[in-house]
Length: 319
Image (tube, rainbow, N blue to C red):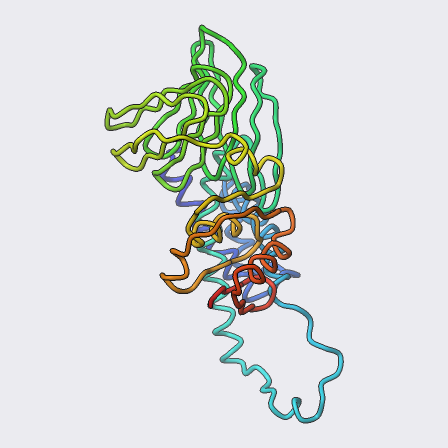
């Protein structure tokens, strides 16, 4: 089967499941989706994958809809409008669209990843060659080790690599538009689309872009690249760079927008900062990220921010 055929089946499975969930709920499966399931042996496999992803998404969905209080005061009761069939249908359609988009966006990564972490999870894994990888929250890697090379693709998020020596097999991490080859022991790569930050905590690495640009990064240094451009190599604090492995977010004269984005990576929902001036505000400090809700309250208190919450999932920070 061609890869494009496989992708088409995945997309169809996602859309059918989203529509079925809105029509029949989580307790039942409609005739249309069952007919599609049995019409081709490949359908059942991909539908099962979609159902597994839906179960993961359901954890977030449940958190966003807290139960109604058992009793409502008469004055408030008069203001409450029961949902009409039309409003219910509109909400179902919106939910179907959201599920479909989330599923389609995550499916390729799930199919490629050999190691991955969920939101708020960190893990350490020893690889087949004896190297070790620390995966940060909501991160994923794919592994391709052969007799001649050791190649890791950082699909999402951030990872630290402690490389086992092997002169006959270079150890390379692909991320976005560039690749980082270990010349020593330990380094961190964080990916954002086709961009990445590479920080070396022991020895050195060689960073090479698809465009041909390259840079050598030594211990205690960092470099950022995006597309065909690689930035200047700059000094970096080893302790600050490794703080996330211990559950801390450390920032020194950083834009508040960047701090909130980092914190949002550990939160099982959506956190947004409103206001360009607020986003550019420079801040320094450290926050424990194992409890993102507590970290948010600390941030709100220290920086005199306000938070508007929609359920327990969507949080909007503003002045």
